[in-house]
Image (cartoon, rainbow, N blue to C red; front, side, top):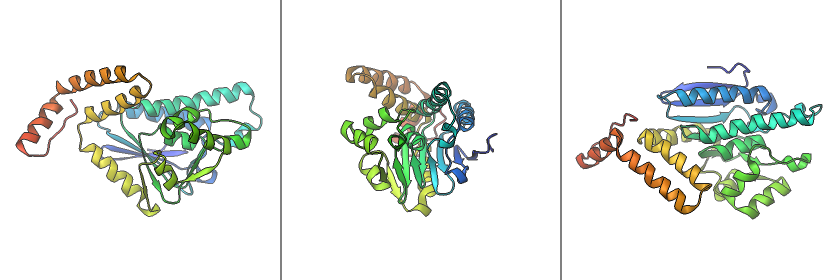
Length: 261
């Protein structure tokens, strides 16, 4: 399925959807139309009960090299704010999406592209990938959550360093900081992302969905409140057909057949 803007394509592979950015001549830079098309695609993903995992990647030398800066030249402040709000809707939607989102990072993930990585649930990166928030070089700051999601992953001082210097970091450094889960040779990137997705797809779908929700919600709550929510969610799961099947399969020493209910 090709997006109306032709800036990304979506392909289905069983219970996986692979969203590939295709604007190679601009290193897959994001513009307003791409954001709008992404929102539509994400809404479609949300409503697809057969879809279990989403993988995002890019063609060419870039995953996503930020916003399309050429569009900033004659933009008014009002138009700039509207563009930032549109981007925020996309990043927030990825974070709230029912399905886990895996970012398969090839090449450059800068600015808004790095913010896509920060909003994803899991990240697999090619060895030659470069990540960063270069907005300070333009007299700006990230506007899609980068100043807030980054310190929640790497800590206050490291986040300030990356924001203030606008330096890029390697895939391996991003892994050491906890941004990236795995680093692999570039030719193995998509195979590694699919292997991770396939492992997730073997687990109970409702448990996977709730794991994503409780971790994200709990980070913004007090520890007692988050644990109370955790107890409620696991009690809800205990009443599902999948939990009964999982427990029975464990006792009977067989592979469970989860149905997502």
